Image (cartoon, rainbow, N blue to C red; front, top):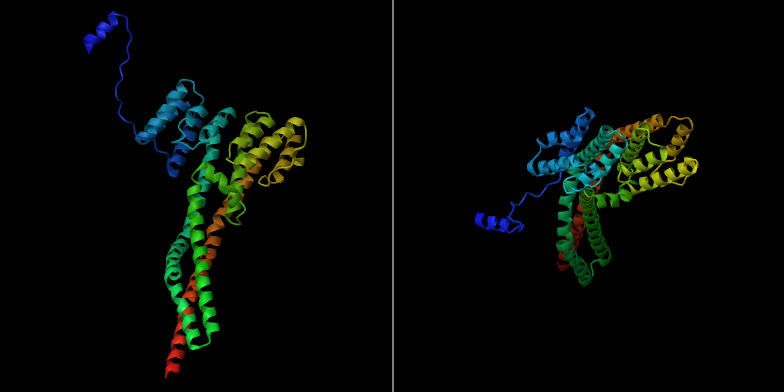
Length: 379
């Protein structure tokens, strides 16, 4: 090999040697807790004044190998002058797709640590919401799974047997109408309960899986936001992020149209992005923000308060106060959610179990009456 290389060099021939590389482990995305810890460390170290490249290398030293490699590659890209949003977006298999956009927004607002803390508060609220929902729904869900199994047995095995009641009553002229009616009602009731139970379980598990992807989360927004208990928490938390991002942008010295556009890119919401665009166009055109037609997710209070604050030259304080107000409202509703949701789910479970027992016992009682009447008739 060495002799051949020397010969080629003497002839001024350039060559390339191809060698097989060891297969690298596929990067794994962060879990919710790991990503929250990573984001918190990144916010704390950058707020202390450390360069983000060094910060990433320090954090990478505590990570597992696949994630460590991805973070070190991002640090190397930043040292080469690659924009931070591009560097993180290239590793979207490890980091959420919008994380790079959020970091880029933090750099443009000249306050990256505060933007990271904003995201951290949002993630902590979402984790607490999931934990509260799981604590409230875990026992009812297990009961509903067991109920679905019982109702499936009834629907596919017992219900066909109930048809014998109608045949026996008709053959022996033993008051067929009540017996047939009870058997029919029991069959329909068990079928309806089975469909309702299975549908509820599929909705819960499908919602949980879909919320882990960006497309699924967007699809679920029109479904979850109108819900009476969970919807306000999600809406207020999203509005608090938007107002917080607007405050950081305005406080950094950005003009209001640019700050509104930047705030719309922080939360992953099509409605808020559209509302930000309309508000930005209104300000650029010299129109009043509170006269704009906005999506229903944006309450009229926000543009009215921002318009008043803009006229009084007090936008940062107004945006900060709005963010604190919606954050406090979300916290209050989140704290009382288990106390409200648990009794509701337990009552629904009790009613479901009671209806299932009725659909089982009624046909059996009518069957016993039919057999008793038949035995008496034969005597």
